[in-house]
Image (tube, rainbow, N blue to C red; front, side):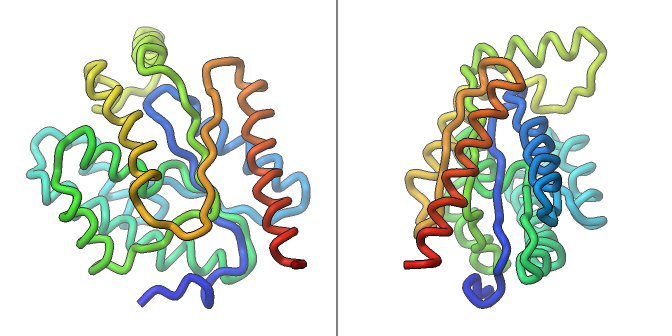
Length: 227
């Protein structure tokens, strides 16, 4: 079984947020900033990050409405297992910083809180597929659901990339936003951190808030290491 303490010397940071929150942009900006400071950074996303995960992502996004609920969850957690054991853990063992665009909080938010799949199904699949790895820091880029809908609508009108979740109604968006926060509240993760960052202003202002949250995490880790 997965042994976090033995297998990780690097840092694992996940970005969460509803559609249109800007989390992917902020994840990429943080990765760029950390590389400029001399860190080795691995960028991944869920579902995806591996050849297997990318294939599952295509199925998930293009056939989402026709997938049986447990089939959908099984595919997502299969992609997660592949990503954890072939990419994330090896990178952490080498002392790298892993930045993941969406992770387990999104899994619970979308599948349990918004789609009403029994939480125990998700819990048990994560256990049996050896996926009980939490990020050291999860950053939620938080925007109001109404802003999410507005941004996604504008992106679609401008001819931007659209997936099945960009077409969901406001109630679904509200549920996913609440679900991310609820996942953090109820799922045990030891001393792992969760930071909620206001994502409703400019990209630059949000990046400043993200960097502050990440700097605080590193400062606390450094203090813990020398005590």
